Amino acid sequence: MIKKAAAAAIGGVLAVGAVPVVLGTMGFTSAGIAASSLAAKMMSAAAIANGGGVPAGSLVAALQSVGAAGLSASSNVLLASTGSVFGALLGGSKKAPSSPPAGPGAEGDQPGENVSQIKPPKPPLRSEKHQK
Image 1 (cartoon, helix red, strand yellow):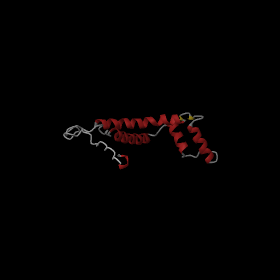
Image 2 (cartoon, helix red, strand yellow; image 1 turned 60 degrees about the vertical axis):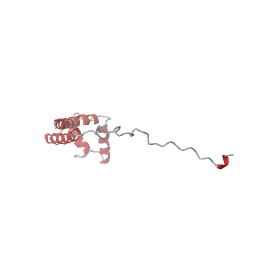
Image 3 (tube, one colour; image 1 turned 90 degrees about the vertical axis):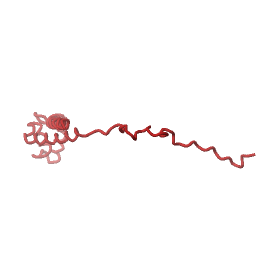
Image 4 (cartoon, one colour; image 1 turned 30 degrees about the vertical axis):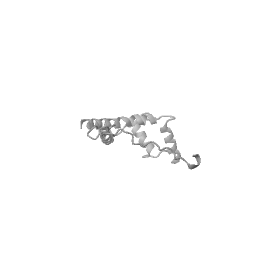
């Protein structure tokens, strides 16, 4: 239970902390859109598609707003909650055992169990033509 709670906390912190890092890497910075970045390419495509300007409320405008000012408190809470859920789900997953447990029916307990079950090949039949 403690592992699951720790994974949930880590997931929440990572989700909130990753947003500014990812947006900054894409080119949505506090100083504006970085030249020759993915954000610049997105802005150019949005401007061309809309006749020369980036419309308010578009994806590029929303990402630039978050890149410049950060997320609101309610957005941070929502993002942290979502990250906590995913962290708890991923942190609570159990790995399958790599080998079956040894018990009363384990391999090697029965006599003759390790004996090869493959029968040797039979010798070829002699043909009447080859006999003299």
